[in-house]
Image 1 (cartoon, rainbow, N blue to C red):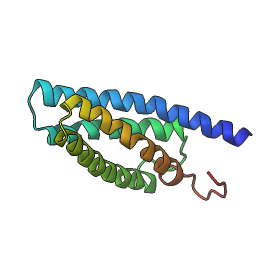
Image 2 (cartoon, helix red, strand yellow):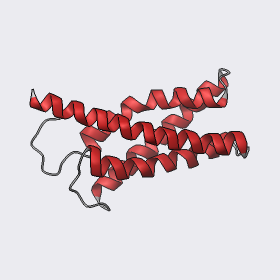
Image 3 (cartoon, helix red, strand yellow):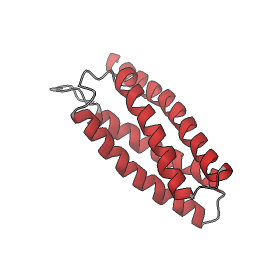
Length: 136
């Protein structure tokens, strides 16, 4: 029972960090794409990268309380995951734009699609404790 509560707390913390990441990502995207008229795909890369940096710092220190070195295998796994997620999110964004969604609605749908995948992979692979014998 305690294990389930611990996992639930991690999921809630991940969601809180995710909301902040989303606000950063979405805000930077809106500024670049809507106000400054930057190409939507370049805006996506820049805004997503801003969210990635925030995500790593907060999920590493608060959500998963990683004791691994800041610059180490965890960071490499985190970057690998997020480069994949950037590709997936850009493809999903392109899909929603192609079927006629507005830029901001397409971005919102893209965030919803990628959030669950990101939590599962972060929990099971990126921030898995070193030498862990625990099953997540």
